[in-house]
Image 1 (cartoon, rainbow, N blue to C red):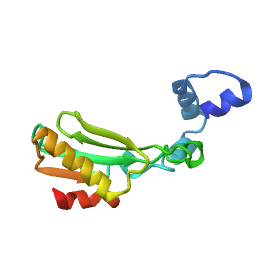
Image 2: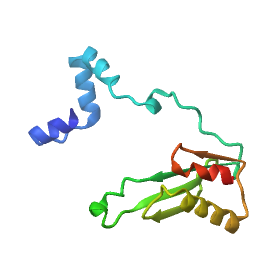
Image 3: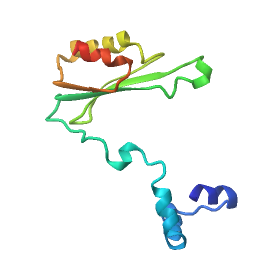
Amino acid sequence: MQRKICEQHQLAVPQGLVYDVMTKVDPEGLERRRKVGRGKRQRGATGTFTSLGPNHTFSGDGHDKLMDFAKDTFPLAVYGMQDVFSGYLVYLKVWMSNSNPKLIGRWYLDHLNKSKVISCRLILDKGTETGMATIH
């Protein structure tokens, strides 16, 4: 609603003010709309993301949103590994692909060789790079 007011009437209205007015004008409609489009994470259905200490649990994931940049003439794929306890970024790689399990596995092995630190647990999504869990 805030965006609609801005686009149609060229007015910059704070989001809190829009919410307060909508609460007074149509509280039932606002409550119905609040439930639409709420994802799993917003509902609190995911488990807690905890670790027993530094270097105990690493979390890895890739980001493909930049792959369509300039219509695949210059694709950028990002893959990173993070220490869950401290939030320390163990490594971050930018390449033309992050779905090749050999490439992801190589980055992980390079990290192990360089740091001489292996975590007790890896958290990975169910993507193609999960072959890295076998290495672990």
